[in-house]
Image (tube, rainbow, N blue to C red; front, side, top):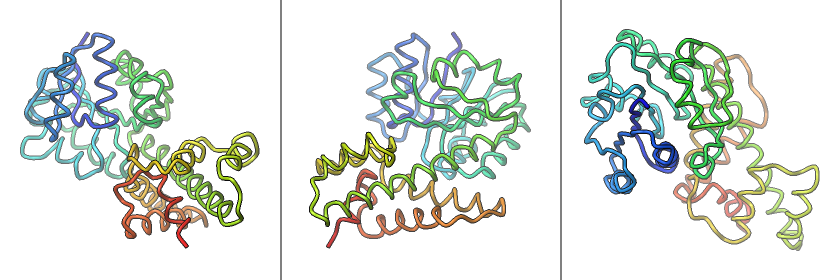
Length: 289
């Protein structure tokens, strides 16, 4: 199998690396957190000191960082991967970033005949670890076919969005805006239930089997009821994603009523000291007297 490089081996990137290593793929890893690299080295990954080193000689580079600024640094910074990559290699972009940023990165990589696969992911670390996360893939058909084996090793839920990098990002923002709206609604409903004197666990039991059910609502509100705000997905992630989604909607000439409300609620949670908690902390925010 061709060697795979992963830049950014936090919750999601680390889970993908573990998945590939378990399937006996050779994997190079790089992260600014040396402890994350060391943990994967113990499992058989090859550590590299920067993005250029991690990408050199690999068939594909998976970028799994937080935002567009980090993505740009990984690809085009002083020790950026593009310096070491050659024509025929490919970059899989997994972060949730603005469609315009994906398109710009793809144009820059194309100047070196490096292909871009726009492939934002959804499902969380456990699903990335077992290969059941979703990947929303936008790239040329020929590029997809060349990298099909590694893409399908990472995910058994691969959605072919289009042949145009940027459309994967658009799809992910639509999904994450709805996730943010659903989570905000679930937090509001449970905070209302508490104020009405209802048992929260019993209320959530009803919701989960009735018309108010949503996966993210159930997942996060179970944590909130248990007062478990250990971050699996920080508030800052949906703060970023709902903002990007509303901006993308505006760029397309669309403005809905709920997206801006969810965006503002996540921004408020961050301002009020909850930024580094799990996004279940929206309940903590709305449950305050």
